Length: 48
Image (cartoon, rainbow, N blue to C red; front, side):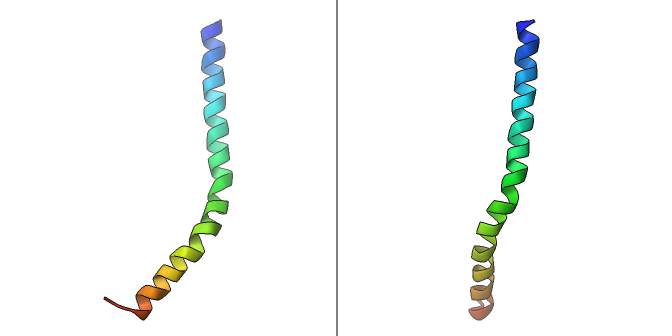
């Protein structure tokens, strides 16, 4: 019985973590995109 509860808790925790990451992706992307854009602009300005 205890083991079943533990397994259910672990899967619920994993689901929560996945959902949390999915919600975070757009936020992280908003933060990263400007940095990536500026790097790409600099690369176009100064080709190696």
